[in-house]
Image (cartoon, rainbow, N blue to C red):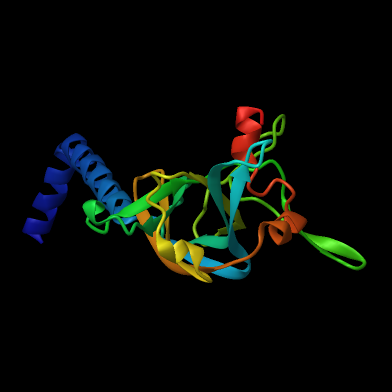
Length: 221
């Protein structure tokens, strides 16, 4: 009992010091818990509206200028971690046939396209919105990925192919092996392998009339 009373007296006499210790311990515990909290992205590719197209670009005299390859990827991105995050950028990669590149993957940055994708049918159509692509004059939508939340939309990529291109032979075949790479605001990277089926450019433009026209729009062609 004497020891307990002595301890009580000591605590009363040193209450200020104990409060400081409790405050420091609370800060340390909070810091440690925050370090343990991390976002974790999950990627799901939706086959419908995921495809690519490849076509030749000619001048007014019918002479080949270059080729253009375009990719549409319908994707759901979910945050299954325990900390909110946001997407910084999205890239699409493929491996070149060029042996000098030591089989390294070539990455294309996400390309803006001027309209949503619309799948038309007899009595109407379904709009498939773009992911992180904004029309001129519109406010930028909030893409903060809270815990347990998802965003869904089409990611579009476009690349010019010329005589010096590192575009692989597999890209001209029926299916194209690719890798999608998503980087969040904390620098965390999540990748997903996928294969896309090729469709003709005329079919792609029935879904989005601007498909394969981004560089033309930028260059005023």
